[in-house]
Amino acid sequence: MAKVLIIYGSVIPRENSISTKMLDLFVDEYKRNNINDEIKILDLNNEDMYSLTDKNFKLFYSEENSDKYINLLKSVDKVVMNAPMINFNIPTIIKAFFDRIAVANKTFSYKYASKGSSIGLLNNLKVQIIATQGAPLGWYPWASHINYLEGMWKFLGANLSESILLAGTKVEPLNKMQPHEMVETISKEIIKKASIF
Image 1 (cartoon, one colour):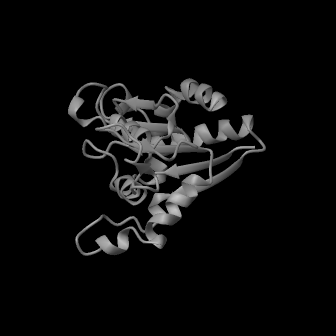
Image 2 (cartoon, one colour; image 1 turned 90 degrees about the vertical axis):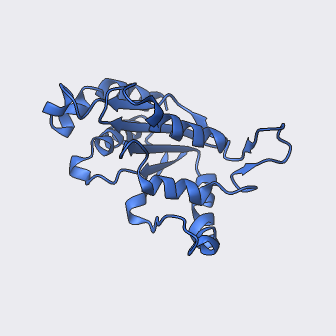
């Protein structure tokens, strides 16, 4: 029996969030194939995910604000996270989450690493990223939120499954569809990846 953490990272209202609908489909299919697995939900919208500033620096990495998320990640085997692209980047709640969990000697270490590298300490995790972006793939190569997400999880030591990306949601033909119709265009990939995750 695996323990799975579902991280909701979309700031778009649930009824309009394509990545949330994709995540929900993935989770439903995963549950059908893994009925004995334990599912935990972490909706970052319901957490106090304020940004790191000079005013809160000392409190930001406290046990209450940082260790609880690190310990949660260390207590599970798998993570599934959704992330729409917002203004060419990840949502700020996901950035604040990574700021909270990227702590030296807790989730990564430079000790025993070769020069110019680090060792991720969350190697217990298998991670699935589910993402959307308004622009078609490759329009803004400098703004790949998928690359950032994959890079962060790899830096922390996680093993990644191939990311699921629905790109071009703001241009034709997808922009003529309702969110659930957009999800239908990629549903076979989502179901397949959920069945083997």
